[in-house]
Every structure is written in C-alpha cells, then in structure tokens.
Length: 380
Image 1 (cartoon, rainbow, N blue to C red):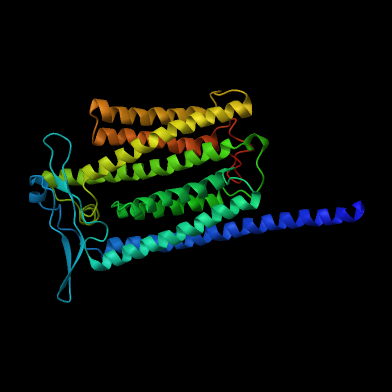
Image 2 (image 1 turned 135 degrees about the horizontal axis):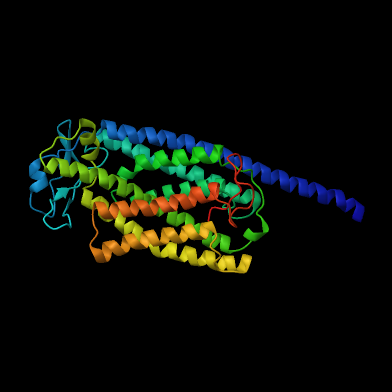
C-alpha cells in the first residue's frame, strides 16, 4: 500500500509544480498585456494634450497680477449652439510675500470637449492596465504561495502597480491630477520594460531569511511609500518648470510655443508646490515605520536590529533627507525652488536605495550574485 501511494505522491508533486509554473506563465502574460494597455493609455494622454486647446487662463499679464479672488470664470466649450461647462479653475494665492497670484490651468484637455474625451479614454485604459498588472502580481504570488516581493523583478511590478493605484485613488478622491497621467504612464512603461528584460527572475521560493510575516509588513509599506514619493517628485519637477514659466511671463518675457501650450494647462506653481509638500508629508510617518519594521525584522533574522548594511544606511539617509525637507518647510520658511531642490535630492536618495544599492553594492539584502542578467535581491 505504501509502494502504491509513492507514485501518487510523486504525481501530485509534479502536478503542483506544473500548476505553479502555469500561474507564473499567466503572470508573465498579464504583465506584458498590461504594458500593451499602458502604451495605448500613453498615446491617449498624448492625444489629450494635443487636441486640447491652449488655455486663456493664466497667460496674460492681467491674470498674473490680478488680486486674489475665490473663483475664476468657468471654462466653457461651444458646440452646435450649446454650452458645455467642463471645469471651473480655482485661483490659488501664492504663499510667498509679495508674489503674484496665478490661477490653475484647465488641465491637459485645455478646456475642449475633444481633449476631454481623449483624457477619459486614457483614464479608462489606465484602469484596465492597472487591473491586468494587479492580476499579474497576484498570479505571481499564487505561483509560489508567498508575497511577490522576493527579488527586484517582483518589486518592480508591484511598485508600478501601486504607483498607478495611487494615481487612480487621487482621481477617485476628486483631485485634479490628470496632469500626472502622461509622466506616470511614461515612467511605468520604462520601469516595466526594465523589469521584464534586465531584472527578470524566474518564479522561485524565497531564501530562508525572508520567510517571515515581516516580509508582508516591511516591504509592502516600503513599496507604498516609494509610490507616493514618486508622485511627489513628479509634482516637484513640474513645479520647477511652471514656476520658471510664470516668472518669465511676469517679467514680460515670451516663453516658447511648446512651453506655453503645455505649461498653460498645468495647475499654478503654488498648487503644484503645495501638492508635493502634502503628499511627502503624509507618507513620511509611514516611511519612518518602514525603517523601524525593517530593524525589528533584522533582529529576528540576523540577531541584530541595526548593522549598517548598505540598504539600512541608504534607507536612513533617505529618511534624513525627507526629514530635512519637511523641517525646512515647516520652520525655516523654505518654500518654492529651494525646498523643491531638497525634495528632489531626497527622492534621488530613495532611487539610489531602490536601484543603486541593489545592483552595485553587496550586503545582507543581497541573496545571490547581483548581475545584469539575473537579480535575486530583495527590494527593501
């Protein structure tokens, strides 16, 4: 009876292995499918910018120097004798003493019905791509029956999924962040392209050190923090461009046609600056918890809470950089460009912790040879 049961057990093991491999292949197909949908969304976002007309709000010297008021006239679209109201731009008062007041632009669609249509198509495609990529992450996890954060490939596909999820959540919360759609899909496609080529790792089990419930807590919070930090960094970069644009207009200069067409439609520089500050400040406590959780996990896995491992060091450097940015904003009055540069330095530290430490530095967070062909490095 025992001998008869042995082949059955072996067959069951082979069947389980085949099922896992099947799920891993499904995951790969879903990730590639998500990339295709994100590409269509990327093209739709471009169409939204191209077919949306340039805004009349914020281009004239009068708009730059007008006194603050609670509302601006509604942006309207004339079609077949009727009027379609798309948006009501909000005038934002700059916080710097003596500075100009500039209204928010109407968005990527530029206040036109055609541009708005392409924008809605782009958002629909983004939602579809998000669902496909989430399915890819989920089936990857099911293929090995663990959290899908055991190597850089898995970290990348999860990170981009969460980044898109943060963007969609902001839209659901009625935040005017459609301007984020084009840079988001661009960087998501680049990150996924890197994941499926350079960073791809076959589905496999974790090394013993990673078998802990802290994997779910520590790495998941690190991924979410990174996604929010990314949104803040994009807003900061756009703020720098928009602030330079507003400064040139205020001084009587004439920006280039392309710059005017794009930057006219973005929120005011003050709005972008405030948005970046709020998202960074909101997620900073969670980043603090991420480092603490990692220390607790290190104590369980390696018998010490802190060992100056390169990943630990750069996580702390990132914490210090963001803490300095928030402290400067709150106490030293660092608003505007100086604070923006400091925020970008902080995000640069996070990026180096994300890629540089894993690829170029060896430490306890590396669980195999780190090469360009196959990375087996845990994300955080």
